[in-house]
Image (cartoon, rainbow, N blue to C red; front, side):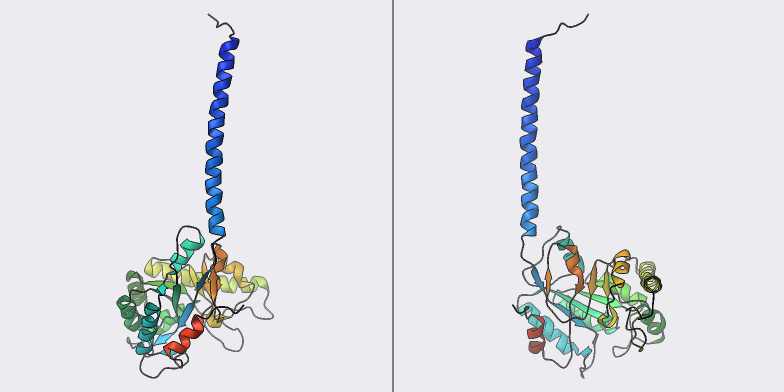
Length: 296
């Protein structure tokens, strides 16, 4: 049997629909306001100052431009601790820029280039002692061609794959890519920069092959894929940027000696400035330079 049309029932259902729609609209507007307010608050956050230290070798008693002594390194770590600085990992920086994490009030990023064996034998125990972390960027050819021909010597040896795995297992060290075999300054190519007469396609293929070779070697030997890239000697070519992104790097390290200002924008981690830690400075002299803010 067919139901007869009821105007009263129709109006009741229509009113019910209006009420339900109104309630849903209110909840939608509240949720939208909360989301955009939260996003706006994060966008309005002041940039965070991030000093970045660039060490190389840690050895002996005679410092040089690229060598600090163990005593100098420990003095640096003590200074950072006593002055309220907290070492942060590259992963923490990535989480912050992707709106998934927070940073301490006074963060500092500690980095070491080239992959010297003393980064394991000297640096790691001091990081453990002072509860800090660091990034060690390795050169693939040093590990594969040089490290296995040397005994483990703090003065001149490089990290083997087993050493690199030990650093990773410590959970205090992140491994960065410092090119497989472009860490040279031979008067022709400066680091991994583009040659004057090189086409963009030629350069892209050369750089991509080198970076992916080391990425694959690190993955095969240690199980991790680096998301940090350190430019050899700090030489940067504009044409390298799309290659860097395509290789999956989220943090890149330069040699420009300036303060960094980190925001929620992931691009703020591309091209981080670093102050080389010369052994010719005292801890106090170096830290004054490192923590100096940009002049107005």
